[in-house]
Image 1 (tube, helix red, strand yellow):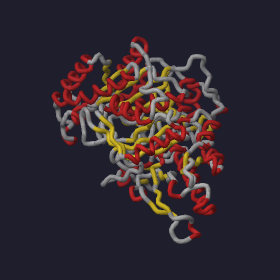
Image 2 (cartoon, helix red, strand yellow; image 1 turned 90 degrees about the horizontal axis):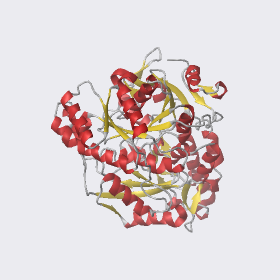
Image 3 (cartoon, helix red, strand yellow; image 1 turned 90 degrees about the vertical axis):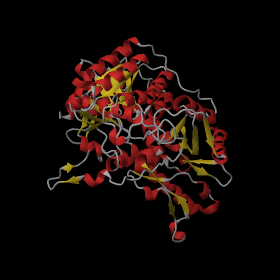
Image 4 (tube, rainbow, N blue to C red; image 1 turned 30 degrees about the horizontal axis):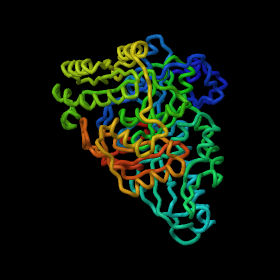
Length: 545
């Protein structure tokens, strides 16, 4: 690794604006001008087809693409989310790329890093404590009706037993007894606010707009009425600054913010992305999971803020194992050669190609190459992409780093230079919330209908009545299917999307729509990654994948 000063110098960051956390990582002060370039760089977004449980390598591809662009003489930065400790110790493991396409120091990034996620946890829980404090001193006839409190607590760990909890038991000194629960920090509205705010002033204003519950006469109550936003912003004043690291090949990387894409909007901060665009010719960013989740939310929520431009091109990551999985092959057999299953599974990838085209963004399908991939299967996929008039490139950044991503980088550059770009949102802001849900379900997921209980429908309509009908919707659903059922593989058609609940994120600026059995607090798997992680007597952390 190079000293972080050297990486900052490559970008043209003023040394006075570096706030170093050791030799190899640093925060960049918001004093660093976001208008350093008269002509901002081009944004490249990396998404994927519907993944297998192991993931298909979006982060690895994004890192390798940035390395490849730098090899071609372009000035490129990769801008990614910070890993949550939940997946790190749970099912997926770390999230810093893999093989020869990684951001480093990977152990630091995967664990506490610069403390951003802990700061989000503290700010969120401070508001929860202030809510319960108000209930305790005001009693049942005060500002808040304890039966309507929607603000839970959060923890950056997979812990299923905390999904539902009762607080305040043990007598009057303990506060008012009520039901609540915990979400994972990556699902916190405070995390979304951190990632959607353009500066500290915007952050504080958004924190003040957080909806926490209703008064006894059913008027919405916001965090500003509890005078909480100032202290919350104080806890986040350093967390709002992007973190600078590097790839294994010395490309600059901005790692900042960590919302999940299946239960939140799934993109790194607009501040980091804006900074990357102001400092480089190309900024490569990654959105969570597939086009139905991360990409749709990136377009309809993140770009809609106006803080960053629409992408100049999009990369859809595919793997032969995911294609065969969606083509009917059992997960344990996806490494066996089966060109026919690749052909059948292409229906899933084809839908994701269609989704990106709905938004009018040029695209390239990138096959993330695995060592056992067979030539016949690769040529089958290439031919299928050709029939769909979709650009195709083989990517071997895991095995070869930036060198293995040159073909992809050249294809992306050609797409930016030659392909038609007519970006458009999926729906207008003035469309009613229920119609927005149906539009996403029909056009992006392929649903035939949307169903919900009357009480859920009335809750959504109450948000409109309270003045939030212009918000985009952030649909929380399984990442393992285009539908709301994680067992519906391939390309399900004309299904009914079941909406089970809704919540208002008035500070972040969207309405969350919960579908199927989605959980905002995950649980650890039967054999969690934590069982493999250890630290040696010399202090070296091992087993972190």
